[in-house]
Image (cartoon, rainbow, N blue to C red):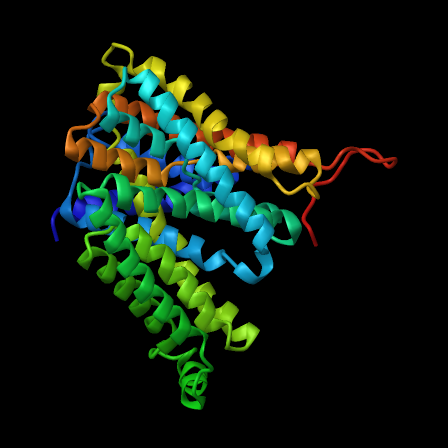
Length: 401
Protein backbone atom coordinates (compact mmCIF):
# COMPACT_ATOMS: atom_id res chain seq x y z
CA UNK A 1 0.00 0.00 0.00
CA UNK A 2 2.89 2.41 -0.58
CA UNK A 3 3.54 4.25 2.68
CA UNK A 4 0.79 3.58 5.25
CA UNK A 5 2.27 6.21 7.57
CA UNK A 6 1.66 8.86 4.89
CA UNK A 7 -1.98 7.85 4.65
CA UNK A 8 -2.32 7.96 8.44
CA UNK A 9 -0.87 11.47 8.67
CA UNK A 10 -3.06 12.71 5.84
CA UNK A 11 -6.16 11.34 7.57
CA UNK A 12 -5.07 13.02 10.81
CA UNK A 13 -4.89 16.28 8.88
CA UNK A 14 -8.31 15.58 7.33
CA UNK A 15 -9.88 15.09 10.77
CA UNK A 16 -8.08 18.11 12.25
CA UNK A 17 -9.03 20.58 9.50
CA UNK A 18 -12.77 20.92 10.32
CA UNK A 19 -11.93 21.25 14.01
CA UNK A 20 -9.62 24.18 13.24
CA UNK A 21 -12.22 25.70 10.92
CA UNK A 22 -14.88 25.40 13.63
CA UNK A 23 -12.56 26.93 16.22
CA UNK A 24 -11.86 29.83 13.88
CA UNK A 25 -15.56 30.69 13.42
CA UNK A 26 -15.48 33.01 16.41
CA UNK A 27 -13.01 35.25 14.54
CA UNK A 28 -13.66 34.66 10.86
CA UNK A 29 -15.40 32.15 8.57
CA UNK A 30 -12.46 30.43 6.86
CA UNK A 31 -13.29 27.59 4.43
CA UNK A 32 -12.18 24.20 5.72
CA UNK A 33 -10.25 23.56 2.49
CA UNK A 34 -7.81 26.32 3.47
CA UNK A 35 -6.90 24.40 6.61
CA UNK A 36 -6.62 21.21 4.55
CA UNK A 37 -4.18 22.81 2.12
CA UNK A 38 -2.23 24.51 4.92
CA UNK A 39 -1.91 21.27 6.87
CA UNK A 40 -0.77 19.55 3.68
CA UNK A 41 1.97 22.15 3.20
CA UNK A 42 2.92 21.80 6.88
CA UNK A 43 3.37 18.01 6.80
CA UNK A 44 4.78 18.07 3.27
CA UNK A 45 8.41 17.83 2.16
CA UNK A 46 9.07 21.60 2.15
CA UNK A 47 8.26 22.11 5.87
CA UNK A 48 8.14 19.16 8.31
CA UNK A 49 8.89 16.50 5.70
CA UNK A 50 6.56 13.92 7.25
CA UNK A 51 4.68 13.15 4.00
CA UNK A 52 5.92 13.00 0.42
CA UNK A 53 4.45 12.04 -2.95
CA UNK A 54 2.97 8.56 -2.92
CA UNK A 55 1.21 6.52 -5.60
CA UNK A 56 -1.74 5.62 -3.39
CA UNK A 57 -2.21 9.19 -2.17
CA UNK A 58 -1.93 10.56 -5.70
CA UNK A 59 -4.62 8.13 -6.92
CA UNK A 60 -6.96 8.99 -4.05
CA UNK A 61 -6.29 12.69 -4.66
CA UNK A 62 -7.28 12.35 -8.33
CA UNK A 63 -10.47 10.57 -7.26
CA UNK A 64 -11.11 13.41 -4.82
CA UNK A 65 -10.81 16.00 -7.59
CA UNK A 66 -13.12 13.92 -9.79
CA UNK A 67 -15.66 13.69 -6.95
CA UNK A 68 -15.46 17.46 -6.40
CA UNK A 69 -16.23 18.16 -10.06
CA UNK A 70 -18.90 15.43 -10.09
CA UNK A 71 -20.73 17.06 -7.18
CA UNK A 72 -20.52 20.43 -8.96
CA UNK A 73 -22.12 18.86 -12.05
CA UNK A 74 -24.85 17.31 -9.91
CA UNK A 75 -25.81 20.67 -8.40
CA UNK A 76 -26.48 22.19 -11.84
CA UNK A 77 -30.23 22.23 -12.59
CA UNK A 78 -30.70 23.40 -16.18
CA UNK A 79 -34.45 23.67 -15.69
CA UNK A 80 -34.04 26.16 -12.85
CA UNK A 81 -31.23 28.18 -14.46
CA UNK A 82 -33.05 29.37 -17.58
CA UNK A 83 -31.70 29.92 -21.08
CA UNK A 84 -31.05 33.67 -20.74
CA UNK A 85 -28.94 33.24 -17.59
CA UNK A 86 -26.97 30.40 -19.17
CA UNK A 87 -26.27 32.52 -22.26
CA UNK A 88 -24.95 35.30 -20.03
CA UNK A 89 -22.76 32.81 -18.18
CA UNK A 90 -21.30 31.41 -21.43
CA UNK A 91 -20.57 34.83 -22.89
CA UNK A 92 -18.92 36.01 -19.68
CA UNK A 93 -16.57 33.02 -19.80
CA UNK A 94 -15.75 33.44 -23.51
CA UNK A 95 -14.86 37.09 -22.90
CA UNK A 96 -12.72 36.03 -19.94
CA UNK A 97 -10.91 33.46 -22.10
CA UNK A 98 -10.03 36.03 -24.75
CA UNK A 99 -8.92 38.62 -22.21
CA UNK A 100 -7.02 36.03 -20.16
CA UNK A 101 -5.03 34.64 -23.07
CA UNK A 102 -4.28 38.18 -24.27
CA UNK A 103 -3.00 39.36 -20.88
CA UNK A 104 -1.05 36.13 -20.36
CA UNK A 105 0.60 36.58 -23.78
CA UNK A 106 1.62 40.11 -22.79
CA UNK A 107 3.06 38.91 -19.47
CA UNK A 108 4.95 36.03 -21.10
CA UNK A 109 6.44 38.10 -23.89
CA UNK A 110 4.38 36.37 -26.60
CA UNK A 111 5.03 32.78 -25.47
CA UNK A 112 1.95 31.10 -26.97
CA UNK A 113 2.13 27.84 -25.00
CA UNK A 114 2.52 29.62 -21.68
CA UNK A 115 -0.21 32.12 -22.61
CA UNK A 116 -2.66 29.27 -23.27
CA UNK A 117 -1.85 27.64 -19.94
CA UNK A 118 -2.02 30.80 -17.84
CA UNK A 119 -4.93 32.35 -19.79
CA UNK A 120 -7.09 29.24 -19.42
CA UNK A 121 -6.27 28.99 -15.71
CA UNK A 122 -7.38 32.60 -15.19
CA UNK A 123 -10.91 31.78 -16.43
CA UNK A 124 -11.74 28.99 -14.01
CA UNK A 125 -14.24 29.04 -11.14
CA UNK A 126 -13.90 26.60 -8.26
CA UNK A 127 -17.60 25.79 -8.10
CA UNK A 128 -16.87 22.53 -6.29
CA UNK A 129 -14.89 24.46 -3.69
CA UNK A 130 -17.46 27.24 -3.39
CA UNK A 131 -20.46 24.89 -3.03
CA UNK A 132 -19.78 23.95 0.63
CA UNK A 133 -19.41 27.65 1.49
CA UNK A 134 -22.65 28.53 -0.28
CA UNK A 135 -24.45 25.60 1.34
CA UNK A 136 -23.16 26.38 4.85
CA UNK A 137 -24.09 30.08 4.53
CA UNK A 138 -27.58 29.35 3.18
CA UNK A 139 -26.89 31.07 -0.15
CA UNK A 140 -27.27 28.01 -2.37
CA UNK A 141 -31.06 28.33 -2.52
CA UNK A 142 -33.10 31.04 -4.19
CA UNK A 143 -32.27 33.25 -7.18
CA UNK A 144 -28.69 33.99 -6.16
CA UNK A 145 -27.87 30.31 -5.77
CA UNK A 146 -29.34 29.49 -9.18
CA UNK A 147 -27.35 32.22 -10.93
CA UNK A 148 -24.18 31.27 -9.06
CA UNK A 149 -24.59 27.65 -10.13
CA UNK A 150 -24.95 28.72 -13.78
CA UNK A 151 -21.90 31.01 -13.85
CA UNK A 152 -19.89 28.62 -11.68
CA UNK A 153 -20.74 25.60 -13.82
CA UNK A 154 -19.59 27.38 -16.97
CA UNK A 155 -16.45 28.41 -15.08
CA UNK A 156 -15.82 24.72 -14.35
CA UNK A 157 -16.94 23.27 -17.68
CA UNK A 158 -15.46 25.92 -19.97
CA UNK A 159 -11.81 25.48 -18.90
CA UNK A 160 -12.22 21.69 -19.09
CA UNK A 161 -13.36 22.00 -22.71
CA UNK A 162 -10.55 24.47 -23.40
CA UNK A 163 -8.08 21.96 -21.92
CA UNK A 164 -9.43 19.31 -24.29
CA UNK A 165 -9.15 21.59 -27.32
CA UNK A 166 -6.07 23.69 -26.60
CA UNK A 167 -3.91 21.72 -24.15
CA UNK A 168 -4.36 18.12 -25.29
CA UNK A 169 -1.35 18.07 -27.61
CA UNK A 170 -3.57 17.16 -30.58
CA UNK A 171 -4.37 19.24 -33.62
CA UNK A 172 -7.38 21.49 -32.87
CA UNK A 173 -9.52 19.79 -35.54
CA UNK A 174 -8.74 16.34 -34.15
CA UNK A 175 -9.51 17.54 -30.62
CA UNK A 176 -12.82 18.99 -31.81
CA UNK A 177 -13.80 15.69 -33.46
CA UNK A 178 -12.94 13.70 -30.34
CA UNK A 179 -14.86 16.18 -28.20
CA UNK A 180 -17.84 15.87 -30.55
CA UNK A 181 -17.76 12.07 -30.18
CA UNK A 182 -17.79 12.46 -26.40
CA UNK A 183 -20.70 14.93 -26.68
CA UNK A 184 -22.75 12.53 -28.83
CA UNK A 185 -22.21 9.65 -26.40
CA UNK A 186 -23.10 11.95 -23.49
CA UNK A 187 -26.30 13.10 -25.24
CA UNK A 188 -27.32 9.46 -25.73
CA UNK A 189 -26.61 8.84 -22.04
CA UNK A 190 -28.68 11.90 -21.10
CA UNK A 191 -31.57 10.59 -23.24
CA UNK A 192 -31.34 7.24 -21.46
CA UNK A 193 -31.18 8.92 -18.05
CA UNK A 194 -34.26 11.02 -18.87
CA UNK A 195 -36.44 8.00 -19.65
CA UNK A 196 -38.89 6.73 -17.00
CA UNK A 197 -37.35 4.17 -14.68
CA UNK A 198 -38.81 0.63 -14.66
CA UNK A 199 -40.68 -0.42 -11.53
CA UNK A 200 -37.94 -2.80 -10.40
CA UNK A 201 -35.44 0.07 -10.31
CA UNK A 202 -37.27 1.99 -7.59
CA UNK A 203 -37.97 -1.24 -5.73
CA UNK A 204 -34.29 -2.20 -5.62
CA UNK A 205 -33.27 1.34 -4.59
CA UNK A 206 -35.77 1.37 -1.70
CA UNK A 207 -34.99 -2.22 -0.62
CA UNK A 208 -31.20 -1.65 -0.44
CA UNK A 209 -31.11 1.95 0.75
CA UNK A 210 -30.52 0.98 4.36
CA UNK A 211 -28.74 -2.34 3.82
CA UNK A 212 -25.25 -3.38 2.81
CA UNK A 213 -26.48 -3.57 -0.80
CA UNK A 214 -26.62 0.23 -1.33
CA UNK A 215 -27.63 -0.22 -4.98
CA UNK A 216 -28.26 3.48 -5.61
CA UNK A 217 -24.87 4.55 -4.27
CA UNK A 218 -23.11 1.83 -6.25
CA UNK A 219 -24.96 2.90 -9.40
CA UNK A 220 -23.84 6.50 -8.87
CA UNK A 221 -20.23 5.39 -8.53
CA UNK A 222 -20.61 3.13 -11.60
CA UNK A 223 -21.80 6.07 -13.70
CA UNK A 224 -18.93 8.20 -12.42
CA UNK A 225 -16.43 5.45 -13.25
CA UNK A 226 -18.00 4.92 -16.70
CA UNK A 227 -17.79 8.61 -17.63
CA UNK A 228 -14.24 8.87 -16.28
CA UNK A 229 -13.31 5.80 -18.33
CA UNK A 230 -14.97 7.20 -21.47
CA UNK A 231 -13.13 10.51 -21.25
CA UNK A 232 -9.82 8.74 -20.59
CA UNK A 233 -10.38 6.34 -23.51
CA UNK A 234 -10.93 9.31 -25.84
CA UNK A 235 -7.83 11.06 -24.52
CA UNK A 236 -9.86 13.82 -22.86
CA UNK A 237 -9.40 15.19 -19.38
CA UNK A 238 -11.24 12.97 -16.91
CA UNK A 239 -12.78 16.04 -15.26
CA UNK A 240 -14.99 16.39 -18.33
CA UNK A 241 -16.35 12.92 -17.59
CA UNK A 242 -16.78 13.72 -13.90
CA UNK A 243 -18.85 16.83 -14.60
CA UNK A 244 -20.99 14.98 -17.15
CA UNK A 245 -21.54 12.14 -14.68
CA UNK A 246 -22.92 14.61 -12.14
CA UNK A 247 -25.47 15.87 -14.66
CA UNK A 248 -26.48 12.28 -15.55
CA UNK A 249 -26.94 11.28 -11.93
CA UNK A 250 -29.15 14.29 -11.28
CA UNK A 251 -31.39 13.26 -14.19
CA UNK A 252 -31.59 9.66 -13.00
CA UNK A 253 -32.39 10.57 -9.40
CA UNK A 254 -34.96 13.14 -10.49
CA UNK A 255 -37.33 10.25 -11.15
CA UNK A 256 -37.03 9.00 -7.58
CA UNK A 257 -38.91 10.35 -4.58
CA UNK A 258 -37.42 13.61 -3.28
CA UNK A 259 -36.60 12.10 0.11
CA UNK A 260 -34.92 9.07 -1.48
CA UNK A 261 -32.89 11.29 -3.83
CA UNK A 262 -31.69 13.45 -0.92
CA UNK A 263 -30.73 10.39 1.10
CA UNK A 264 -28.78 8.81 -1.76
CA UNK A 265 -26.86 12.00 -2.49
CA UNK A 266 -26.33 12.52 1.23
CA UNK A 267 -24.46 9.22 1.29
CA UNK A 268 -22.44 10.16 -1.82
CA UNK A 269 -21.59 13.58 -0.39
CA UNK A 270 -20.53 11.97 2.88
CA UNK A 271 -18.11 9.77 0.94
CA UNK A 272 -16.93 12.77 -1.08
CA UNK A 273 -16.61 15.54 1.52
CA UNK A 274 -15.83 13.11 4.33
CA UNK A 275 -13.00 11.24 2.61
CA UNK A 276 -12.01 11.84 -1.03
CA UNK A 277 -12.29 15.64 -1.38
CA UNK A 278 -10.22 16.44 1.75
CA UNK A 279 -7.53 14.10 0.42
CA UNK A 280 -7.35 16.14 -2.78
CA UNK A 281 -6.82 19.42 -0.93
CA UNK A 282 -4.33 17.97 1.56
CA UNK A 283 -2.28 16.28 -1.18
CA UNK A 284 -2.38 19.57 -3.10
CA UNK A 285 -0.71 21.15 -0.08
CA UNK A 286 1.79 18.30 0.24
CA UNK A 287 2.82 18.64 -3.41
CA UNK A 288 2.85 22.44 -3.41
CA UNK A 289 6.35 23.59 -4.41
CA UNK A 290 6.93 26.07 -1.60
CA UNK A 291 10.70 26.14 -2.13
CA UNK A 292 10.31 27.15 -5.78
CA UNK A 293 8.04 30.00 -4.72
CA UNK A 294 10.30 31.30 -1.94
CA UNK A 295 13.77 30.73 -3.35
CA UNK A 296 13.89 34.20 -4.86
CA UNK A 297 13.30 35.71 -8.26
CA UNK A 298 10.00 37.08 -9.51
CA UNK A 299 7.76 34.09 -8.75
CA UNK A 300 6.64 35.43 -5.37
CA UNK A 301 5.88 38.81 -6.91
CA UNK A 302 3.57 37.12 -9.40
CA UNK A 303 1.29 35.79 -6.63
CA UNK A 304 -0.56 39.10 -5.99
CA UNK A 305 -0.53 39.79 -9.75
CA UNK A 306 -2.28 36.51 -10.51
CA UNK A 307 -4.65 37.01 -7.58
CA UNK A 308 -5.72 40.35 -9.06
CA UNK A 309 -5.94 38.86 -12.57
CA UNK A 310 -8.34 36.17 -11.36
CA UNK A 311 -10.67 38.97 -10.29
CA UNK A 312 -10.16 41.12 -13.40
CA UNK A 313 -10.24 38.36 -16.03
CA UNK A 314 -12.94 36.12 -14.54
CA UNK A 315 -14.77 38.40 -12.14
CA UNK A 316 -15.38 41.60 -14.11
CA UNK A 317 -17.11 39.92 -17.11
CA UNK A 318 -19.34 38.10 -14.61
CA UNK A 319 -20.27 41.40 -12.95
CA UNK A 320 -20.95 43.02 -16.32
CA UNK A 321 -23.16 40.19 -17.62
CA UNK A 322 -24.89 39.16 -14.38
CA UNK A 323 -28.71 39.14 -14.68
CA UNK A 324 -30.14 42.61 -14.19
CA UNK A 325 -32.62 41.42 -11.58
CA UNK A 326 -29.79 40.78 -9.13
CA UNK A 327 -29.17 43.66 -6.71
CA UNK A 328 -25.75 45.30 -6.83
CA UNK A 329 -24.55 43.63 -3.64
CA UNK A 330 -25.50 40.23 -5.05
CA UNK A 331 -23.67 40.96 -8.32
CA UNK A 332 -20.61 41.93 -6.29
CA UNK A 333 -20.82 38.68 -4.30
CA UNK A 334 -21.23 36.75 -7.57
CA UNK A 335 -18.09 38.44 -8.93
CA UNK A 336 -15.89 37.35 -6.02
CA UNK A 337 -17.34 33.84 -5.87
CA UNK A 338 -16.76 33.43 -9.62
CA UNK A 339 -13.13 34.59 -9.27
CA UNK A 340 -12.47 31.92 -6.65
CA UNK A 341 -10.44 29.12 -8.19
CA UNK A 342 -8.08 26.27 -7.30
CA UNK A 343 -8.81 22.70 -8.50
CA UNK A 344 -8.63 23.46 -12.22
CA UNK A 345 -5.65 25.75 -11.71
CA UNK A 346 -3.84 22.78 -10.19
CA UNK A 347 -4.92 20.54 -13.09
CA UNK A 348 -3.99 23.09 -15.78
CA UNK A 349 -0.59 23.93 -14.30
CA UNK A 350 0.15 20.21 -13.98
CA UNK A 351 -0.46 19.87 -17.73
CA UNK A 352 1.77 22.87 -18.32
CA UNK A 353 4.58 21.38 -16.24
CA UNK A 354 4.28 18.02 -18.00
CA UNK A 355 4.54 19.70 -21.40
CA UNK A 356 7.33 22.05 -20.32
CA UNK A 357 5.18 25.06 -21.20
CA UNK A 358 5.50 26.65 -17.76
CA UNK A 359 8.28 26.68 -15.16
CA UNK A 360 7.76 25.21 -11.70
CA UNK A 361 8.11 28.58 -9.97
CA UNK A 362 5.41 30.12 -12.19
CA UNK A 363 3.16 27.12 -11.62
CA UNK A 364 3.69 27.55 -7.86
CA UNK A 365 2.83 31.25 -8.16
CA UNK A 366 -0.41 30.44 -9.98
CA UNK A 367 -1.41 27.76 -7.47
CA UNK A 368 -0.40 30.02 -4.58
CA UNK A 369 -2.59 32.81 -5.92
CA UNK A 370 -5.44 30.32 -6.39
CA UNK A 371 -5.05 29.24 -2.76
CA UNK A 372 -5.30 32.87 -1.68
CA UNK A 373 -8.40 33.31 -3.86
CA UNK A 374 -10.10 30.45 -2.00
CA UNK A 375 -9.14 32.09 1.30
CA UNK A 376 -9.96 35.72 0.49
CA UNK A 377 -12.61 35.98 -2.21
CA UNK A 378 -15.38 33.88 -0.60
CA UNK A 379 -15.00 35.91 2.62
CA UNK A 380 -15.34 39.13 0.63
CA UNK A 381 -18.28 37.64 -1.27
CA UNK A 382 -20.11 36.66 1.90
CA UNK A 383 -19.65 40.14 3.32
CA UNK A 384 -20.60 41.82 0.04
CA UNK A 385 -23.71 39.63 -0.21
CA UNK A 386 -25.22 41.07 2.94
CA UNK A 387 -28.39 43.01 2.21
CA UNK A 388 -28.22 46.74 2.96
CA UNK A 389 -29.29 47.75 6.43
CA UNK A 390 -33.02 48.36 6.69
CA UNK A 391 -35.09 50.44 9.10
CA UNK A 392 -34.60 47.85 11.79
CA UNK A 393 -30.83 48.09 11.81
CA UNK A 394 -28.27 45.73 10.38
CA UNK A 395 -28.92 43.85 7.17
CA UNK A 396 -29.14 40.09 7.05
CA UNK A 397 -27.55 37.60 4.73
CA UNK A 398 -29.93 36.90 1.86
CA UNK A 399 -30.70 33.22 1.71
CA UNK A 400 -33.25 33.26 -1.03
CA UNK A 401 -35.67 31.25 1.11
